[in-house]
Image (cartoon, rainbow, N blue to C red; front, side, top):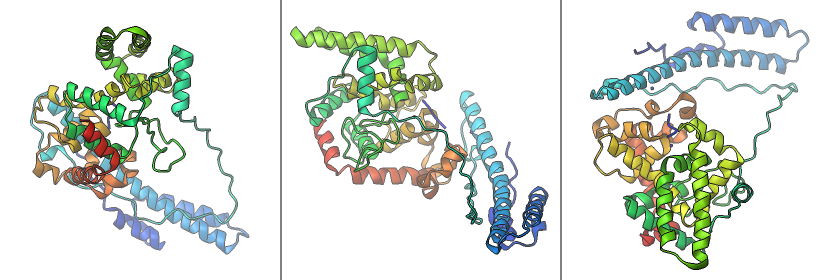
Length: 405
């Protein structure tokens, strides 16, 4: 995901113990002193400002004070938990660097606290809505093609049919060392088993608006395309050069132009330090959009799709993990980044059943991820991934891709 997502801190009492007095509006001394004082100050302030306020406004202010006190108590507990997660992660990384064995004691085995207190009340009085900064538009296929033409005088060679792209992907993936099971099941998970070579996140299953730049069978982001050109560009150039050498006539001229453009893109991608953040900066520019357009090309697209997964396979192998990765394990590395994913993959089954998924997330990402919350151990998360792959592999696109292998 390259862009991946780690002594102990004593946790404060459980959230429901802290929040119950606030929800009832009494016994504030049960709260931590800082929270209790804040609660009292808010109540005093709101009722002092009451004046001629309506009963609805006074009730709103009381509920708001309760809510803010409850959130403060929760944030104190959650902050301690996620600090412990971070410290444990650092400890695991240090042990791996020194070749030490990772054990259960290197993970937080409690599940994270989830907020169960009162919801933020709705203000009955009109409020000024702070203006949100305008979000940059997410580029779609037309934008990528325009950027490639303007910056590189190049238009990707689109396949004549979906099955032509699938066959090209299958040939390159097999030759590079991916298995049919890995490719088809990851495709099934990423696209629902129905996605086309140019499918974009959000513009699928009736969706009308792109929600990210993730595109294709393995849902590459613009940053993925830039990073793959920087790190695997030499392999792409070699493979395309071989094809040029086997081709003649007008087709060869078109391939020679494509090869020249590819060499320029690889040089531009390599011109910055090899880090995710630097590649992301390019990915957010027209130059990055032009590079991302190569996902659509019948020659370069299958290489990008393949190496999005193959880099994870090679990363695991380089770390001494020689057993073939299951499709679900490969997807964990694809989703969370190679280092974090390998942490889960190398874990024996008894540990998988005990270690919470929160150990592999940052707080914000975890709290926005209902799948990780519901399937809250490594074993459960891998199992639900496998189940979804099983189901989606029966869809038409997945069957067609399997046939292409």
